[in-house]
Image (cartoon, rainbow, N blue to C red; front, top):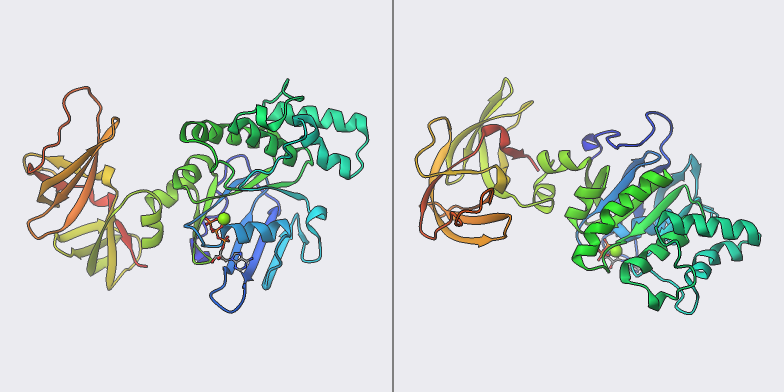
Length: 375
Ligand SMILES: Nc1ncnc2c1ncn2[C@@H]1O[C@H](COP(=O)(O)OP(=O)(O)OP(=O)(O)O)[C@@H](O)[C@H]1O
Ligand SMILES: [Mg+2]
């Protein structure tokens, strides 16, 4: 799926030069079944905050562990900073990993936890102290040096784990679900903190998550994985607004997905027949034919009581159900032919919720908001 690689879309990455991480045709098999990682090609430029996103079991941790050197690829090549790392043990690689269950030593103070990695490699005491204090400053734990882990909050413990990795001054920091152990509010605060930390230290972050909101809100670019394969690599807005396949469209955000047939295409337009909904012409670059997925995001849908005058494409549906989320309301509608779809309506004023079971509405969307999915 290299054709979908969108090039360097990251912010903060230097404009030229060799990527810091190069993954070429990497496959990892455990035993005889499906490979855990299957022919992955990725290039990560220096300074990028790069996310590996995908459902449980798709191979994210395995790929990260191969970068760290804890697993050996069955085939393929990994280069870090230009050098093939096949024969380089984990502790000699210019990377450091923060694990999903952030292991900190419970009996050691914050200072000693962070100093540990420098102590075992024989960094002299004075330099050690300077670097530990610098790392603790970066993660905003100044003043807590003498605390023990059980005297810290979950977020602070996670920052100790980060400081432990940063103090080694890796070129690439690998983070496996770094925020998954935190509660929802803290997780959101830590997202911003990690992004700011990445900017402050200027090193490359590769982080694994199965949380699409986390990936969308933090990453410069995201690789979406399924069954060991990379399905698409792009910046967050491109993934959301221009997914390359049904899987990515469905995995990133919510989507209404219909089946359709292309009746004609050319001159930047595709004429579609959407199952149960009728004819719809949409802008589409290049030729397309056969069966396609036709998708639209719930927030792109417009609902009106009268048939919209401007919309070339509209149909009637009945509100079956709705869910109120405070900032927005999700409406679930069904057409007379039994086609179901959902629409998200922002609650921009404090009036009563404008949703009523059984209400009939005209559904429309801008043709340009239609996603035509060939895979
Ligand atoms: N040491 C191992 N031995 C055998 N199979 C393994 C090993 N490690 C991982 N696997 C298998 O490889 C596949 C990918 O696992 P991996 O841990 O990389 O997934 P993941 O994307 O990180 O999932 P999660 O989101 O649940 O952490 C899974 O099917 C898993 O069972
Ligand atoms: Mg994992």
